[in-house]
Length: 193
Image (cartoon, rainbow, N blue to C red; front, side):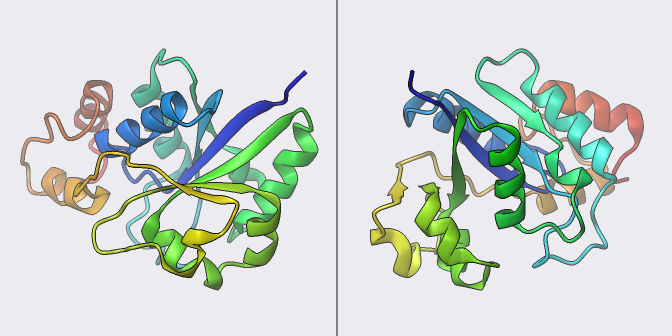
């Protein structure tokens, strides 16, 4: 029996927005994956901590965004790992916990271009397939031709979580920028205000 193909879409999702959901759904339905897990990262070693909402609040927003969408799920696997969390360590934990799954990484061409800065990036390239979506201004760098890297023509998103946080803080509408359940929760909870 073929192993279950699971794509891991890591992010701070601070907050999750329609761009994330469009990419997750694209990867889940058009790349041969059985599922995409949106892995909520507690702290990216390459990002500063200041503006990050609480881990469980961001996870809750991702769960609301997914709702009952088939083939998508939220993952909190990194919450229980040492901080900062490194992708290679998370992959080792997931492989150990789910030996029957075959994990791939989903990342933007911007991340692929800086992959050489990641801890043990050579092992990631050797042992995992990487599904890349385009990011404006980032052609993808030296690893685009690697046999374990595939680029997909996913929709380009010029939408950022920073933009959404600023809109919330300034009292502007975020209608259409985030899934309706996320907008309702942000309004109710006062997050990012």
